[in-house]
Image (cartoon, rainbow, N blue to C red; front, top):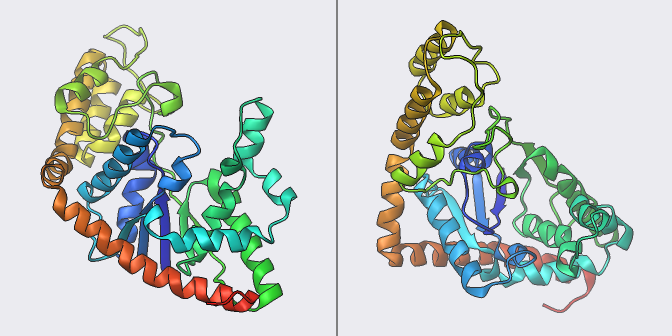
Length: 321
């Protein structure tokens, strides 16, 4: 089976991004034929600074490699390095009903809030469909909020197949497993839009400062406390071993501790967790040639596959190849 996923380079990823998605993407390379791309064309709908977009694109590739994406097991490339996807997008756009795109959530939400919505955002699901269909992807790991876009992709592919013959593989979503809720520094869901994130590759000192600022309640130190649903305990559990979690649970239930003690424990286990990826990322960043080679090789492999699909689509609809 072929699995495909893209990561938008719209800012620095945080703990929630890792546990909610990146960790699972990396795991899929062990058992699937995987294509992973940095979706810089999609990011243009929000990032309008050329230097920033270029830097975010590089950063996203470094992040994935630092966390263990293996270019010998998975194809890693930048979306704009495979122009066949954009050409396929136009072929698909030629037959997509306007109403189908009007019903897509991202466009509807912006319109409902009175926010400006570009043509790029409106047609975003079609470019996403081209991303998926170009590689004959049959498995697409997504969160529940992205399932609609996979359904749109299936509708687009089914319509094309009905009109022009069996050209496209119909993809199926693989719903990413729900991890423990990843709370932000204010206890709400960690999200860039809330300004409550802890970035994956903050240096140890910066990360520790953010952890120590995490909001807590005012229960007396001596009171026993239920760890379930406590956002500090939830964060600690993401990084800690089972024995460490059991010890921290006992501390909560016993009472007579301060939240500063828990924060210090969280900072310690998070620092240990990220120590190896942080070192690997610094090494990659200090020598850009391997990254250029990996992305160049990935683009070459991705283009070879996308060309096959584009040729099938062109021949089916009467476009000379």
